Structure formats: structure tokens, C-alpha cells
Length: 339
Image (cartoon, one colour):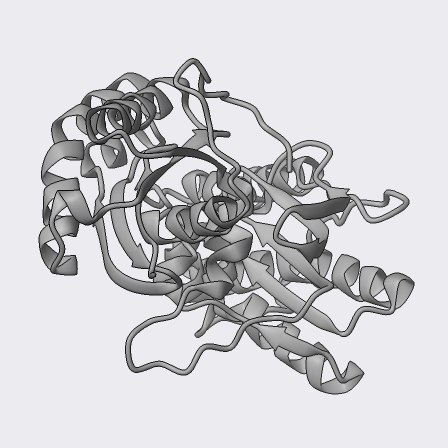
């Protein structure tokens, strides 16, 4: 008997609902919030209000597109954290109400787990390509930069993480300094394609182990622009593509350097990437070269599964459903959660 999971994602500024039939994706609806662009970042209060407006129509559309009816849903999975508390409360409250009304299981999902297991979603007409256990996962986004060994669906070990800022935040904050709109990461990636990645050099962290650091890079970039603008008021405009290419190369070098070290130390040959920055073409190109050189099996998710979406919540919920790992109606969301 197939299991139908309704997934709800509301951790930040995207309201999303998805329907899975076992691992097969039937629908994945996302309502983004453009209101934050003029503020240069997410405004938590505005995000939670937008979720309240979006949650019901998004769920309704997901169910209709999936070709099912509400009584067909066997369980509802929701993001419990990490994320913005106001945003999480909207999704959590909806999921609890839905589960209570239908008398079906409620499944809480760790947002970070969900990014990792997006590799196991099956789409109609597409041959799935999923990593085998154990595999290394580089989870890199605007809020997180983590290296983890994934031994199965319920056993994940963090072996490296950022000690300050995330890689995605470095992209966005440096882009803001250059006058770019939020989020700046995708625009930097696009402009870098026509720039010289070796035009400028920025500081890289010198830390032991497998941890990451990006605060020093942001400071280095800021001071470099400050000094350069003293001599040329149009320095950014005249060098924008190469600034983007050099910044991207620096961040990618930091990430791939840690990946190579982790793969060598563990002996693992399976490597997956996840999170919003996984869509960065510079990172993908560098990892493809490393994978070919070191004979790794590399797994890159489709761009539609790198950003926040409910399909990844539903697939994580599916594997918890199989184990009977259900949440209680008194379980509260958490703004901060670890793997």
C-alpha cells in the first residue's frame, strides 16, 4: 500500500507544500516573498505574515496538482527547525491542525536533514541517481555550511562546520557591498562567468581541522573595496565581473579544500552537495573536476531542490514514517537545531 505524505516548508521566506507517493513526487508548490528585496535581507515579521497568507492556497494547489484528495493523505510532515521562529510557527500550527482534523500522524523534520535527503526524491520520467551509504555531504546555504558523513537516513555525523558565517551569507553580504540586490549569490554566479577569477586576491581562513570560516573573507573584501574606491570612484562598476569571479573562486576554493581533506581522511568515495549554494556553477565545476581526478561519485541535486522546498520535507518525513518516528502535538519548533 503506497504512503502519501504532505510536506510543509516554512522555515524562512518560502511557503511550500508538496505531495509524495512513497518517493515519487506528485507536486511541489512554492510561494516566494518578494517583499524582502527592498530591505536587503529577510524581515522576520514580514515573512511570518506572508506565510499566513500563503499557507492555505499553497497547500490547496499542491493537493490539486497531485491529483489526490485530502482523505488520501496518510501523514503530514513539517519543518520543525532550524529557521525563523515566526515562520516556523505558521507551518507547525497548520500541520498540527491538519493532522488533528484528519487523525493522521504528524512528522517533524529537521530542515538540514531535508536538504541532504533531497537526493532521494524520485520525479516522474526521470531516472533517480541517489548516493549510496555512507556518503559525504557538503551542505552549504545562506545560513549553514556543514560537512557531514551520512551513514543512513537516521544517522548523520557532522565532521566540519562554519565557526562564524555561512558561505551563502558571504556571497550575499559581499554582493550587498557591491550594490547588488538580495539575494546576491545567483547574480554573482552569473557575472563571474565573464570575469577573471585570478584578478584579485582575498584572505582565506587558516584554521585546523575540517571547519570553515568566512567572516575574515567578508572583512578582507570590504577593506579591499574601500581602499580601491579611494583611487577610483568607479572601481566596482569597472571591475564588477572580475570582482564576482575572484570572490566566487575564493569561496569555492575554501569549500573544495575542506571537501578534499574530508574525503581523504574518511576514505569515502560518495560525495553529495545540498543547499542553496549547491546551485553555484563555480562550485559544481570545481567538484566535478575533483571527482574525476579522485574517482569520486558526485551527486548534484536539480536547482529546484537546492532552495527551500517542501518536497525535501516530504521525503524526510517519508523515511521517518517508515520507522514510526512521529511527533507530538505539544512539540514546539526550534529556531536553532543541529543535525
